[in-house]
Length: 264
Ligand SMILES: [Fe+2]
Ligand SMILES: [Fe+2]
Image 1 (tube, helix red, strand yellow):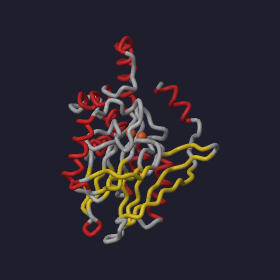
Image 2 (cartoon, helix red, strand yellow; image 1 turned 30 degrees about the vertical axis):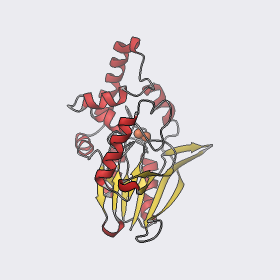
Image 3 (tube, helix red, strand yellow; image 1 turned 90 degrees about the vertical axis):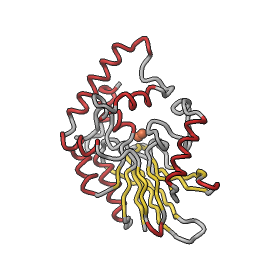
């Protein structure tokens, strides 16, 4: 059993295409996309290109905080989603700027939603927030974006100021979610770098946590992170984990600047 793990390509269809192709070339039996499928408020490439590729791949996908922030505006889920973002200590805006900043964000979220085809929005909205897959002899796999129960924060690892709001009760609840699912491995996304660390499951059992990394720019090279996980049932290390960066060519290298102007 091989899993190809990708995440956080955030609306860059070219990096997603390379990430999916690497997973196929490596013989992945299943592909996991751990969220941040699109970028809020506007994606680098037309959202349809990302959604078509991801849907056609048959990948097991979950939304990330970008997707939630973009899609949940104007829906019954918005108060919970906005609350999760607003309780982070890296400010979205200063309180004294609030009226103007709300209008700023509303305008861009409405524009961002309008850029997504209606059936793609419905497909994204139907994705489960987290997943537990049962892979038989290879065990169970827990998939979340940031930390269990919350795509806006991370505990593997925590970083300041983005996770300064995460307290011991939040960590305890996240660990309880993991123990309830009883996985052999946890796959997540959200933070930029690949990771491989451990958390403690039921009875103190060590559970590997893996993040593939996102898309990055190094000098003039555009790179997409992919992790390939191979099950080794019965071995001392039940999963062999290989990380790699894979080059892609963005359709429009200037889109980053255009997005920066739009998103502030
Ligand atoms: Fe992300
Ligand atoms: Fe994220």
